[in-house]
Image 1 (tube, one colour):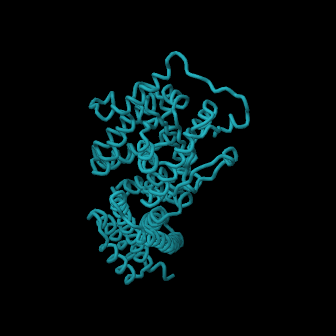
Image 2 (tube, rainbow, N blue to C red):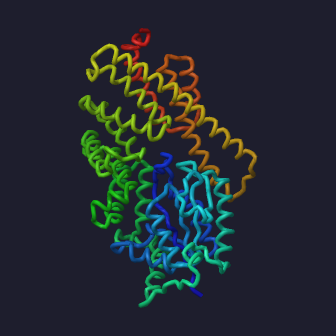
Image 3 (cartoon, one colour):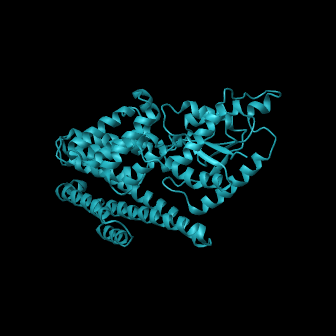
Amino acid sequence: MDEKRCFVVMGFGIKTDLATGRKLNLDKSYLALIKPVVEGKNITCLRADEIKNSGTIDVPMYQQLLTADLVIADLSTANVNAFYELGIRHALRPRTTIIMSEEQMGYPFDVNHITINKYTHLGDSIDYFEVLRFQKLLGDTIDKVLNDNQPDSPVYTFLNGLVPPELRDNAENVAKQVSDALAQAPMQETADNQTLSIIINQAEEALRKKEFIIAKGLFNSALLIAGSNAEQHIAANNSYLIHRLAYTTYKAEQPNEVEAAAEAMRMLGQLDLQHTNDAETVTLAGRIEKKLYSLGEDEQHLSSAILYFERACYLLNNRYNNINLAFLLNLRVDTDLYTSKLEKIADMVVANRIRRQVLLLCKQDLDKLQLRKQQAAVQPLDSSTSQLAMNQQEEENEQLFWILANKAEAYFGLGQIDNYNDARTQASNVPHESWMMDVSDEQITRLKGVMDKYGALLNE
């Protein structure tokens, strides 16, 4: 008997939910919540980026939507492609379609009457107990839909007697070959045989190891595959890959820091920087412009960095955007961009208002982190959860360090030096890589120079 096949409809990589400004790592959702559950039931599982590259993936994708024994659609971040593919599946097959999404997604009217399985995403990670809860929920749902003769497609529910289409000319065998290719792809060593998923995973692994030049080359290859050689298509559908390529270009610093940063900005220009509501893209643009100014480029880069971080704060009111905006406003005081004393005072005052907001955000983030730790403390650990718990602990340590480092910088800018020293000491006691404290201290050193020179303005 042929093995059953499941096709997963969802985005890949890190996507921004424009409704909330949050970024979600959809690969974590796929690899932690979906794939192990499906494969645990002896069902072949694949996503569009796992289809072996042989030109456009549209044909095998449509074949999978028609022939797959099961389709799971994750609508998180309101991905328009996922909605479109879900609609195609509902039109082609009366049953065996499961819908899921992150709990904060606002559901449009047309799917309000459809069962949607919700899960909680923390952004970069998923709590390991949430992984276990949702895996059980999804497993039970798969068992139910595969053994239920009632339609789950609204098309076939409301249009009684509608006959679903069939594949002809042996196309079903072609679709099966796609699944077979997925199973064989990891064994292939040539670039021509690698799936988009494999290349992206290799790029992310290189990025994790800080091998930026290698990661840049891999993301560039992934973008060429995903874009089907159409520049407009690339910009419209692969913002994650463009964002990643720009980031690795900037971090690779080749042939030098200035030229690499300038090239990264040109890449981000494909994403319509003047109008985009993607907070991650705007933040990266601000970060690169900030770097260009720190490398001695003209003051216009400082102005651009401030404008990008201001937009990023409105789009996503988080600690990183706010603490950097406050810092940049202080740097502007020590330039000729604004020459009047009143304007310099205004920047100093606004910077400190923002820092007080940062302290509130730090408290909120610390409270959330503490709540997760309390919930985890009462949950039993076994062999299936110990590795998940270890991975989450590493992520929480990094998050805790940056909360305390942002808190320390906010206190320093506000002139509360005792509180700054306490927060910095707490941050230093959290397990972290040395470069993290170096980055934090470097910004404090630059801030100290401005405050020593212009701090008296706040007394006026």
